[in-house]
Length: 555
Image (cartoon, rainbow, N blue to C red; front, side, top):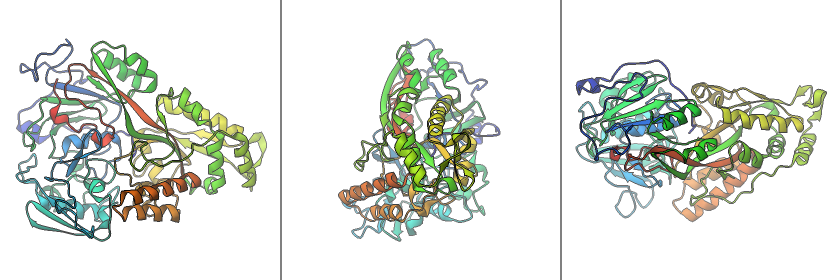
C-alpha cells in the first residue's frame, strides 16, 4: 500500500452527527471549548482539551471506501470508521471484531483440506444508521470486491474464493478455489492492501457499481467513530459511534488535523495546537525530546523506503542497467545524511522482525562496477558525459511526493548517477496525484519512483511483485513479469507450513534482488510525540493498526 496522498472538495456534517445533535467548531481546528465532563480525571497540562484529541497528520485520505483508497491516511481513518472482521493489535496479532474468533484447525474454522473457512459473526452488530450488520454483509463485500464493474484497487485473496454460504445471520462458510495460507489476514485483517471491512448491503446492494457511490466520501460507520465533517485541506472531524459493539469511545471528539508541512506540524505540537504527532521526521527527533508536556515513544514500523524501477521503460528493460543504478548510488550516505541514520537498513520488503525475514546482501556502492555493466549493456559515453544507445540518451526521471527530504535524496542520486553517465531529472508530485489509480505509478507513466510502502504482518507480497498483479489488477507498479517470482509467491501461499513458506520467501527475495525491480533503503524507526495527558495510546508497528485501540483513548 502506498503511503501518502491528498483529497478534494468539501462537504458538510454527516446526517448521523446532526441526528445526534453533535456540533464541532472546526474553524482552523485548533481547539473547541472544553467539555464540562472530563474523561479519565483532571488534565495536568493547561492546554489539554478534556475529551477532545487532536491528531496532527500530514495527509488527507483520497477516499473513504477501502475498495478505492490508496494511502496510509485512508487506511488509518478507515480503522476509525469501520469494524473489520479482525483488527490488528500494536504487534500485528489478529483481534476478533466482527468475527467472534480467529478460525483455526482447533476450533473448526479451517478444514483439514485448507479449502473451507467458517466465520462466526458476532451477534447484534449494527451499522450507525441502525441496520443490522451480519454475515450477509460479508458475502456482499466479497461479491462487490470481485465484481468487474467496480474499480476495486486489489482483488488479491478475494479472487481465490469460489463461493460463500450464509446458513444464518451469524455464520459465513467460505469455499476456496485453491489453498491460500494468507487468506484470513489478507482479506479480513484490519486495513490496507486488499483487506476490506464488511460493507453495507442494505445501502449499496442495489447500485449498478460502487465507483461513484456517495458512500465513498460520506460513509456510514460500523467502527468506533462517525465522520462528522470533512473540511478538505484542513481536517476531518469525528464523534463517537453510539452503536459501536464495544460501546462508544471514551473521547467525546477526535480531530484529524491536516498539516502537510512537517515544520509547521512540529510547531503545532510545540504550541499544543495538536496533541499527537506521529512519524516525526528524522531531523526533528532531537528537538522532540526537549518539548515540555510531551511524551516521546519510538518503535520499528513496517514502512520501507525504496527506489522502484519501471521495467517497462526501454532504458530500464535490461537488468544490467537496473543493477548499475543500484551500484552507482551510495545508499549508506543517503541514509546517514538525509535520514540521519536512525532507521534500519533494508534488504527486502519483508519486515526484519518477521518470521519470514530473508537473508539478502545490501547493495554496495561500486561506481566502477556500475560503469562496466552499462558498457556491457551497450550504453556508451556521449555528449556531455551522458550515455546513449542507438541515438537514445540514458535519461531518466525520478518522481516522489513533493516533500523536502525526498528532494534531498533525489539530488544525491542525480549527482551520483550523472557520474555513471545517467541523466536524472526530478519530477515530483502531490501525493494525491502520484499514488492515484490514474497517476504516474499505477498507470506506468514514470521511470523511477522514490517512496515509502507499508506492509502488514502477513509475509505474502504477491500483490507487489507477481506478474498476475500488475495495475489495474494489483500493485506491481514495477511491471516486472518474472516467472520465478510469480511462481514462488504462489507456492508460498499454497502451504500453511511456515518453515516451507520461509524457504520460499527467501528464494523469492533473492530473485527480487537479482532482477532489481526495486532497491530497498530502510525500515522506519518511527518517533511519536504526544500530549502527556493522553492515556491508553499505544503506537503500533503496522500502519493499519495505528488507531487500533482508539475506542480506549482518554485525555
